[in-house]
Image (cartoon, rainbow, N blue to C red; front, side, top):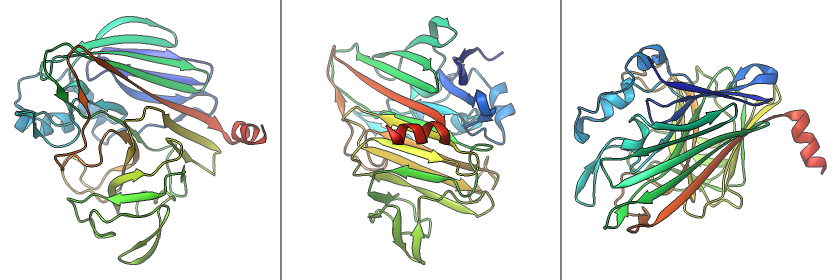
Length: 322
């Protein structure tokens, strides 16, 4: 049985899975009874695989990660992306912290504290997830317990989905640059060549990137947003008036990966069934380049805080008027 903790506030109903990375499985906006995070088409089977036995090697780690991926919001550490040699050792797909069980320290209605000690790097992570009205705040304190410098990635991985997400939703941000993944040619843009956000010139003419594609549009995008003034990215549903606003303030995460799939990824286990837009604040641009990752010195720590706020158009209008 999966070990989950339910957190609630006046506006939110949140489920955290301690057996797989202390990830946030669900965020429901209570006043409108709307789930905002994506559930994978194989979510039921994914949950049945948890906790995931740590019997696979790093080079074979992608398959169990994908099989047990039910959607939601993960935190990728010490690595994001495909297995890669870092500091002389092969790192697991999306990082050990995102898939191993965590230890619960304390929990109440709107507050959870948990921790994990990793095997792949000598690190302890202390996590606090707290709710306040319509805001979920996730804060990680990451401490290097060893006597060597650790190179690391830290990436928040919230994937949004239906019923909140639908064609015509809008991405709102002051980022001005979008860079398509340099290692994958998805057809729309030249890989690795930066374009203006949100009105970009693609291989097919003008592309308006801020509008969420329809779930049957066969759209697939992977790249990153950068050149932020404020590190905030929101998704607004103009039909329902509900907005999900993701924000972070640390100076290290200068980028936000953008992953969109609207029935275009035909690889297993997606098989053309996916519908999501993920906004992923990250410490580096691409996991396929050997550069850009920060380091954590011996007996030092770093803190990352990410928050997601859900509000209705009525609330947003009040904020604009202030």
